[in-house]
Image (tube, rainbow, N blue to C red; front, top):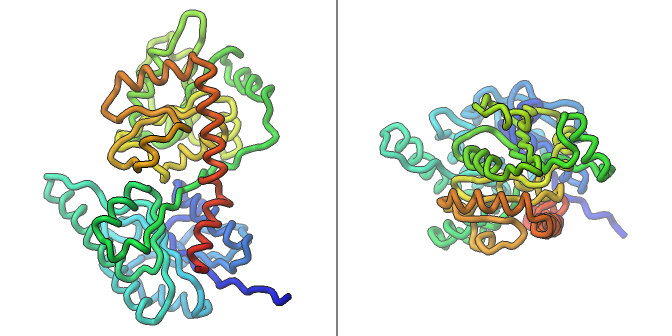
Length: 380
């Protein structure tokens, strides 16, 4: 039987390791999985990135408005290559947009190049501040131009798919939800003994329940609610620790709380996996609601950690009713505190939620599943 030749893939991304961030990790993992699936992958990225990887990296871009350089780079790849843009509106430009980008995509469209725009963000929220209003308006202006030129538009949030399919019915067939999988490989060799070992290494009681918060420290991620949930979950006969993975700001705490607070900071993926394996509850009270684009959510689900989260304006209709995560509205602080208390202290509920989350992750959100969904659209 004659082997089927898969089309080459070119990924455009400003971010790639060793730069930090979810999008850098996502680009590296996407390139690796597509290469392993049989596509010859080239990543066109910024100066200073790359490393010892099995795909080709072209770290040439200093100014992403230099579309002549982008065009020159494309002359080195076959004309049937699928072009994938990692899209966050402010990533390729200054002041929030890159006015050259839609024009360049339009030129590629006229040449018959197949373009995929993996959309991680669409636009900033509007604000009464004139500068921020301009910023948000230009995001939307750039996005509407891109809709005309992209052939396939995977979007990382089901709510955005629902909203934009209603707003732009002519482009609706281009949209589909493509979750952003975990960037933390799960160590399958970890056992129950490793949960105890992790507690001992970090000077926590072996019987301590662990609430974990994972990610950058920002208002949108609602860490004050997570801290409050932890405080109200403390019991005289049950130590409850709070572990912060990622940015580790100084948080004013009473001495009894500080004894159970472990800010790990930025640590290697293997250490993140060990910490998640030791955790009991992941606190993710997003102010905009949980969604498929949250890689910290995916990491918790993959590691079998029960998730306490919130629903909001960026939560899709299916996620509003999901039973594989514990959630309350993003406006209900007291409800969130009660939710965390229940997950910490009611073992059966916590284990049920954790098992359901892991099963849903493996069906819908793992890297093999996500790459298969993308490849079905790329080659369809």
